[in-house]
Length: 113
Length: 112
Image 1 (cartoon, each protein chain N blue to C red):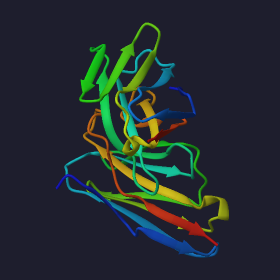
Image 2: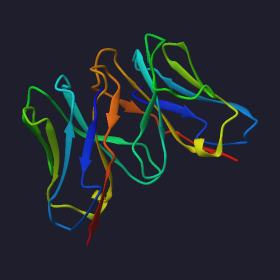
Image 3: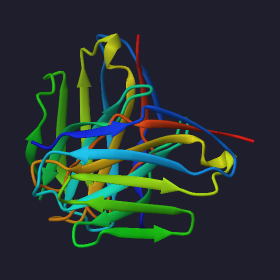
Image 4: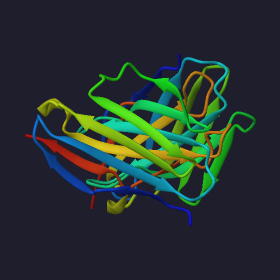
């Protein structure tokens, strides 16, 4: 399995809702990442997990809460989002210690209404 | 931390022409430079990459060159085709780690 799987593919949520995005990989990668991508912009790094521990948080608002319950799974919990948080959320993974073999998931298209 | 600048932001060429996109980086410790292609509504896809011990790498119509002294690297696409139309991003490692940060992107349009 050489894929990173993200679910759901699309999500519409209200500003008072709580939802979660899920990312899964079975390549044995021990580094996993969350990115946010707005239309016509580059992916922006949000969080980095190494060996299931949060190693980088790029000053992301607390309404985004990441979680890495095991080496294959990465979640992003969403609460009290704003319309400007609408974007494509991409997950990626790599073997630990290298940027080579960076694999992106297909993303979750999030719309906050 | 690393900063990646990419130029131009848009590029229009005729089918069969060559296209060149340039990026500069700030961290001299960076050692890996990938290029991604993103079509509308899809995820970024790696098209070519280069490591710092190599000056040039080629894969069919695509090539990447690296100048470590000047801290810049370039994507070259020859004999462009309409299906090359997409947004292209360069990237470099962030804080000497494994995460990548991306340039602002170049929208390439190839007209037939």
